[in-house]
Amino acid sequence: MPNNAFRCVVVKPTREIFTGDVYYAEVPSTEGLYGVLPGHESLVASVPKGGVMTVWLDPDGKEKRQFLLHTGASQVLHDHLTVCTRFGAAIDEIDYDEVQKKADALRAEIEKHKSAGDDAANDSWLETNTAHLEWYESELALRK
Image 1 (tube, one colour):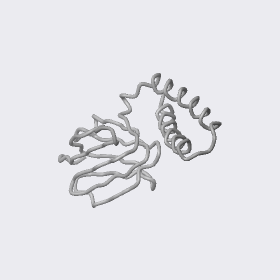
Image 2 (spheres, one colour):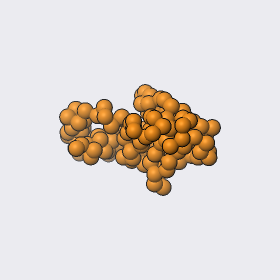
Image 3 (tube, one colour):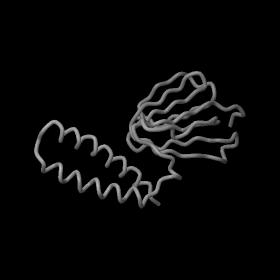
Image 4 (cartoon, one colour):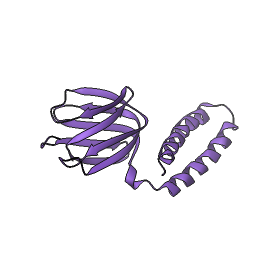
C-alpha cells in the first residue's frame, strides 16, 4: 500500500457523505469495480444502482469505510476522486429499522398512485418515488 494519500469526496444532491484523504479506493462502476491509488490516470465512470465503495483510510489498509451508492458518476483527476451519487450512505450509519418503515410506507403510497390514473404529474411522482423505493431496497439488502 502506498504511503501517500489522495483526496476523496463522495456527495449526493442533499449533502456531502464523505470528504477526506484516502490511500486506496475501490469504486463500483457499470463496468465493474475499479481501484484508485495516488497517481491514477484520469477517468470518468458511471456508478450503478446498489454499488458498494470502499476506501482505505490508512496506509496499511486496516482502517476502512464503506458507502452504498445508487446511480451517479465518478471521476479521478489529479489525485482527486469525486463520486456524485443520486442516493448514498455510509454503510455503518444505515438505520435498517427506519429504512424498513420508510420502504413499507412508500410501497403503500406507490400502490395508491398506480391506481390513481394516468396523468403527467402522477407519472412523475411514480417515477421519482419508485427510484426512492429502489434505494431503500438496496439499503435493506445489506442488512446482516
